[in-house]
Figure 1 (cartoon, rainbow, N blue to C red):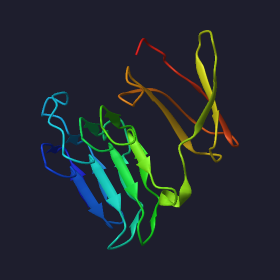
Figure 2: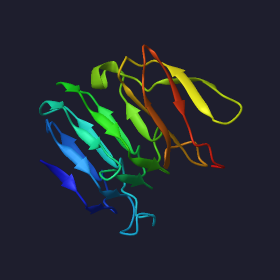
Figure 3: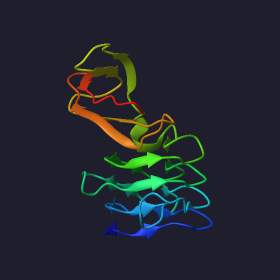
Figure 4: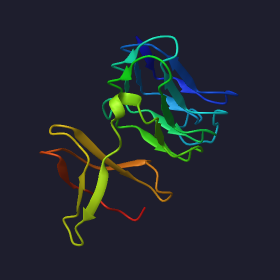
Length: 178
């Protein structure tokens, strides 16, 4: 089950609050924007809150493809918050979304033990000439690593992606003047 193609904006609290919901898919929504995907109609807290107080919150997909990308912007809290409290919160995939201009601790907040303690990859380098590439670490072999950019150091535009080989990655990136 899931949400798809909705405008979820202007609420006093979270745009989407998922407590448990194993197997839920959240795709193609405008969360915190108007129907134009741009206007500021932010929610009063997080755009999406996933937690595990009442049940198992596992194998949840937020985005998942370019066609299924959510726009998550202008919310007072984080764009997405994975909040592990009591039960399993793992296997949550957050890919291809445009997440920017949110409050809180940044585009995505991962509590220390949420999602099997998987943290965001670390950027360790950038080639200085074209073709540009970003190098990093903190991944497992086969992980999909996506790079996003915008003028506020958040994630409005997907600029590159690749599959990790070993525990590092080297991804070609389209670096524009963000």
